[in-house]
Length: 434
Ligand code: URA
Figure 1 (spheres, rainbow, N blue to C red):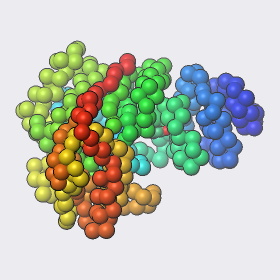
Figure 2: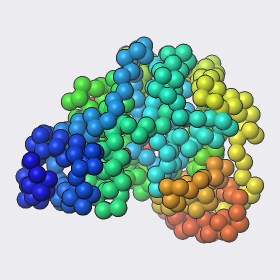
Figure 3: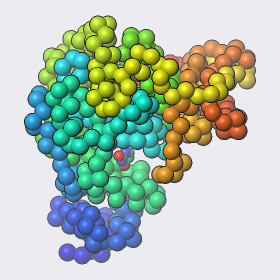
Figure 4: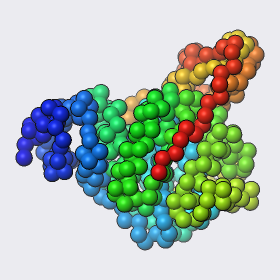
C-alpha cells in the first residue's frame, strides 16, 4: 500500500477502506509518513468529505493508535462528558462533583484552553496546589475511594490525534465534520468510559457557528460512539453568548462554587442540571429525567455536592479550604466596571470576542508556552435581552496590567450591540440526540 495512492483515491472522491485508513494512521503515528503527504490527504478529505463508514474507521484507528484506558476495576457504569468548547463554559467544575455526590463514578480526562475557549484543567489549577498529573493508578484509586478524579490527557492517549490536530491547525483543515468528530471521539473512546454525554456548542463562541452544523456533528459523534458499543447522548446548546456570567479561570471556579451552593446563574444551573440528568440516566442512577433532576437538586441543597468538590480538590493536592473561603483563590489587583455606551437592549454579543478579551488580559495562552494569569477575566452583568442604561455596568473586568486592561475593554465594548428593540430570548438547549 502506498500513501500516494490513498491521497489520489480521496482526491478523486473515492471511499477509503478500513485497511487504507489503518495504514495511514499507523504509519503516520510511527513517523513513517511525512507531514506533507498527510496535509494533502487532510485537504482532500476537507473538500471530498468522508462517508459515515470512513469516519467511523478513522476514529477507531485513531483511538487505537496508543494506550487505551481500562476502567473495568472502577465499580459501576463510568460516564464521561465532553463539551466541544466555549466561553465561560465551566460546566465540568460544577457538574462532576454534583453527579459524583449522587453516586455516579466520575473518571474524566480533561484538556486545557484552546484558542478563545477555556479548559477545565486550567480552571481547576486555580485551587492552590491542585494537580491533574495523576498516574493511572492514582486516577483509579481516587475514583474508587471518593468517586471522582480528573486527569490531563496523557501523551500516549490517541497520539495520532495529537499529531493530526497540530497539523490541521496549521493547514486550514480543522473545520471538517468528519475530522472534528473523529478527533473528539477517538480521545473519548480511548479514555474507556461506558457512556458518553456530549455537549455540542453552537453560536458565535463555538466551533460550529451554524446550528445545522452542530446538529450534524452531534449526530455523527453519537453514531460513532454507538457503533463502538458505548451509550451515547448529546445536547446541542447555545454559545451565542458566554455561559453564566463569569469568564476567566478563578472567576469561573467561584461561579461553579456558587452554583454548588444553589446560587448560580439561571442558564448555567439549567445546563448543569440537564447534562447531569443525562449522565445519571446513562449511568443507570435514575430512570427518568425528573428523578435525576431531583437527585441533583438534593445533592446541592444538602451540601453534599459542595463537600464532594472539597474532597476532590484535596485528593488531587489542592487546598480544600478554598471551596469555603474564596479569598484563597487567585485574585486580580484591578477591578474596573465597563460602562454601557448608550441605553437600550443588549441584542448581540460576539461571544468568541469575549473569550479573546480574557485572553488579552492574560487569562489564556497566546502560544503553547505561555503561562496564564488565573485571576483575570470578566463578570458579565448584562446579557442578550437585558435592558441597560447609558453608563450602567455591562461587566466587571478583573485585570493586573493597565495597558492590557485598556485594550481589552475597548475590544469588549465592540463585541456588544445595544439596540432599541428587545431581541427574542435565546434558547439554551436547542435539541437532544441519542
Ligand atoms: N476538539 C478536538 O478535540 N478536535 C477537533 O478537531 C476540534 C475540537
